Length: 126
Image (cartoon, rainbow, N blue to C red):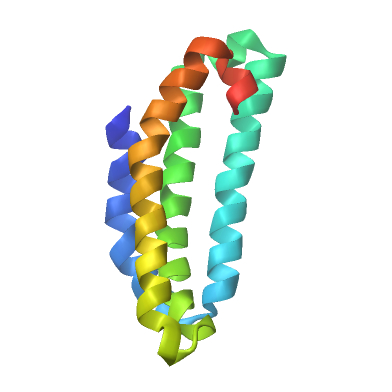
């Protein structure tokens, strides 16, 4: 399942970075983030409303694939937006803060997810 969640993002990122250099980064970030949010919402609704549909592995893998592609577009678009909205004087500091936040999220997310899964059902977490 990790392959479906990570591989599309890795394959899309180089092309997404080039697209975000040529087109409006803000629109790409908003559109891709909206797709990720919509796929998450659909997954949550399926888990809450229809237990049989939620156990359809191909549907859930498809939603994970959509989220992965969306993140593949969103990450480079947002990363390239930072220099546009930050003054040159503060750019190094802001990039450092952004990278620190990303590192904390990558380290804390699995622990938080494991903790939440022991306390709440998946549909409530989503």
